[in-house]
Image 1 (cartoon, rainbow, N blue to C red):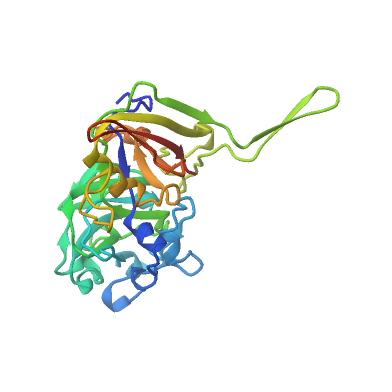
Image 2 (image 1 turned 90 degrees about the vertical axis):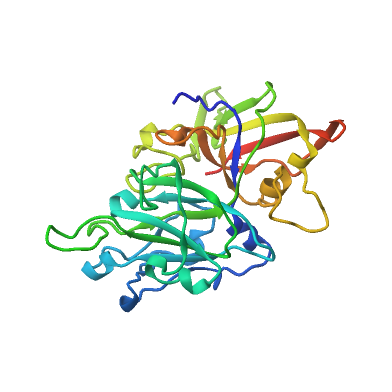
Length: 357
């Protein structure tokens, strides 16, 4: 799967949760982790392991820890996260991303479901909710009965047919057995489940490749060089960018060794020529309609320009093994989206996209 980070048809994975939070919706009561409840087979966030809002803060290197390995009961319980992502109008959802998890080490798997009834996605195993039928983008190597088992610690993205149900549930459950004589699925006893960030929304594919004058940059911005009176130069480095450890790594890093992480911030400047008006702007500007498909509708508005990070794929055909190489956690590095008309209903649009750490 040679890619060399070349731009083909790009894809944007933009998050509905942070869009709604940025427009005044409260996290508490809308984006929740169901609390530990032995009778209902639920296990929540570990004491001192972080808070609910940190699952949605777009800081994936900052993990939230769940109390899944404490004892046999909790190891057989489920972590259930409930999301209200409708807003004022029904919105389409077609992807879920779980960034910087340790599901392989914790012995966990993922179950995604939705409903227009909130109670359906608040209980373990989701009862009457509709289970999503996921397709792997990356690190969802085994999908059995629509349950996802990542092959590695790291980040996982799955897509599915568009759904406009209001309430969504993401359940983490054990994937292994306690012993040869015990039934049921268990988390491991030597690693609590950890998750860095959760995104849900509708992905958007640009309809064509960019013009040939793409500018790609790798920048070491944290390097400070000073020169002494004698002409000697001394350098300090604040950060080299991506991070990697055994069970905690930046999005789309696959190594566990800091020595094997490429440093520097990756960015692209690119122009798309002769995009149809319908691919750029919404039909109406007087009110936001999440059912539309355009650059503004599905990317630039949902991120409030450069305010909210997103997942960027430089080639939407890159899926499966080693697809991480075509993905970055990113942000628009521009205050405005300038559109230049070049023919009737045809426009040129430029993007600057920076990697986010």
